[in-house]
Image (cartoon, rainbow over all chains, first blue to last red; front, side, top):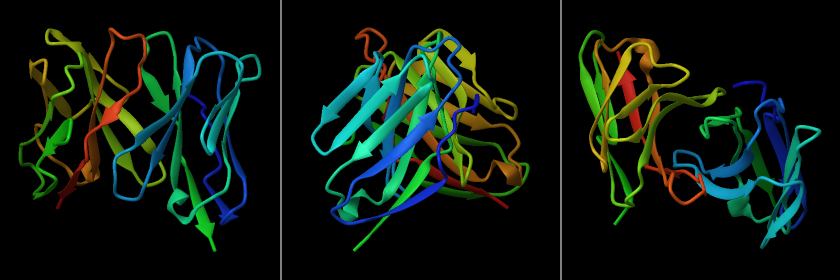
Length: 109
Length: 114
């Protein structure tokens, strides 16, 4: 969707830190969302970045660089329940988000 | 009680049948959306509505139609179902008046067209 790129799959160890990257075309950019989706369930909101920089929310942080068309979601102290898909969504002039294909994160013991 | 509900949760239908998926919300949001999700393709927008009298096509509207019967209800119809419409369908809402466009998703409808 509109050149939003994220890795398809990542694996990490319980207790570790993982960074999920998202790159996008910068034209008409308003903001960027991250959602978490467990298998067979609805996506749930994690974060929304409009300005450059890092926003921290508990174990999860999200970073945005508007000029570079780049964002990442940082998950610390990984838990088994963090195994899920992480969806990057870019909001443009119409305020309708366009979703990337998602990154499937597998956390193993 | 869930804020965004979808009915049915699962549906198996045959090629050529007309079916309707329904979405209701109690969040009082003005904006509603229909997405489909296919393995490896992410969420793709079918239709969206910013108000009762507002209907807009999304990325993949062909073969679908919608009706916004009230602020709280947004229905998706497949006029003549075909097998490649087999997918997981999500309804979502957001509050266009708050300045925060976070979306709230329903639990999804798993549709199989045989």
